[in-house]
Length: 105
Image (cartoon, rainbow, N blue to C red; front, top):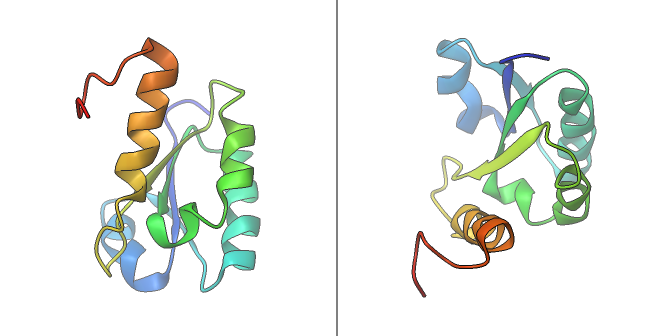
């Protein structure tokens, strides 16, 4: 699993990652994204997940928080940011450090 990176998201959002050599797991709906994320988690250390699927899969993402790997990071899709990735990052930093050092809100 060392150093392997993947992305789960809709086809348009992940195309540029595929061009950069990142393993891609296309998903057109929440069910397919859940299946793809589970599959990617077995082999990849870092997994990017488009925000459109991150919020509906929050229950699954919480399970990944219990282990060091995989690290799942929500990123904006081709439709733009919904702010959920930033929210996840802020929450993780607050849990780890006890204070919001990134956004200071």
